[in-house]
Amino acid sequence: MKSKALIVIVCCLLGSTLAWAQDEDAPAGGRGRGRGGPSGPPPPVADTVAPDIPNVVAGGTKVQLVKDGFQDAQGAVAAPDGSLLFTERSANRIMKLDKDGNISTFMDGTSETNGLSFDSKGRAIAVQFNPPRVAVLAPTKSTLVDKFEGHAFGQPKDLVIDKKGGVYFTDILGLFAEGVGPGVYYIKPGGQTIKVASDIPRPSGVTLSPDEKTLYVIDSLGTFVKQFDVQPDGSTRNERNFAEIFDRRPAHSLADGAVVDAAGRLYVATYRGIVVVGPDGKKLGTIPVPRQPVNLAFAGPDKKTLYVLGAVLAARDANAVPEFGAIYKIPMLAEGYKGRPR
Image (cartoon, rainbow, N blue to C red; front, side, top):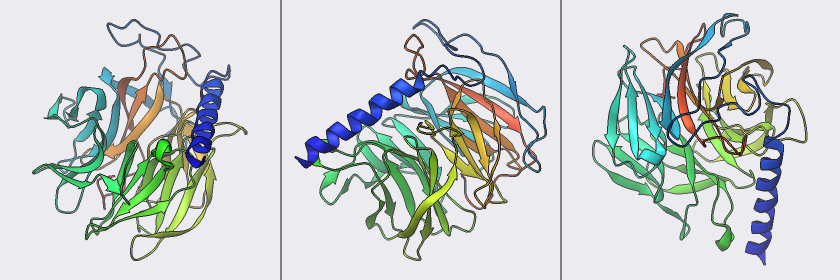
C-alpha cells in the first residue's frame, strides 16, 4: 500500500508540473520558442540582457550564445585549468570549452553522466543515470556508491564535493515500487553513505555555502530553496525555507542547478531565468536567458564568467525538440567561489 500511495503522489506531482509548464505566462523568448525538426536544434531565439544587479552584473550585459545543438547538456563545472566542462548525458560524453572558446570531447563512455565535479585529490566524480550511481571517472574509473540500505538509486541528478572529500548528491526519483522516495545523500570521506533529506518532492541542484556550513537543495517541484545546517560529520539539521525563487504560488519553479559566488550569493537556474539570492535570502534579481536554464557554473581564469546551459524542455512545448542544449556566457562583476570547482 505504501508504494502504491507513493506512485499516486508522484504521478499527481508530475501531472501538475506539465500542466503548469504550459501556462501562457512564458519567460523571455516567448511561448512556443525553440520549435524545430528532429534533424537539428531549434532555431535561434531572441538575445537577452542582464538587469543591473549591484556587485553581481552590470545592467545591459548581453547573455552571449557560445554554441547550440548539444544533447542533454548538464553538469557544468570549472576544470582545474579554468576551462569549462559539461556533460552530454544522452551522448555519453563530457565536453570541454577552453579559454579560447574551442569545444572538444574531454571524455567518452560516461554512462549517462549528469552532474560532475572534482575532489581535492583531483579525481573527476560524477552522478550517473545508467547505471544509477556515484562514480569516479578519472584518473581511473570506479564506483563510489550504487546502493543505500540494500536498494539502488532512482536517478542521481547533481552533486557538490566538500573540502574534506565528502560528496552530497541528489536522487530526483528514488524507487517508488520499493517504497523509496527521492532523497539527498552524503558520502563521507571514509566511504559511508548517509541520507540527509527525504522529504523534498524533487531534489535537483545541490550546493554548499563558501564556508560549507550551509547546504542548499533546489526543489524543482516547489517554489523555495531548502537550506540545512551542516554538522561536523556531514549530516544536516534544521531544514528550512531559505528563499522563494518563484513569484507566484501555487506553482513550480522548475528549478534545476545552483552555484554560489565568492560573496556567498546563490544563483539558481529556474523557469524565469537565473535567480540571484543574497546570503540573507533576499532576492537580488533575475537574469533572463533565451532558453530555460538548467545548469550553470563560474569558470575562466578568474572565475568571473558565468556559463549557463539552456534547454528546450518538452514540458514547455509539446512540439519542441526536447532538451537540445545551448551554452551561454555572461561576463560578471561577481567572482565565483574559488575554494571548490563549483
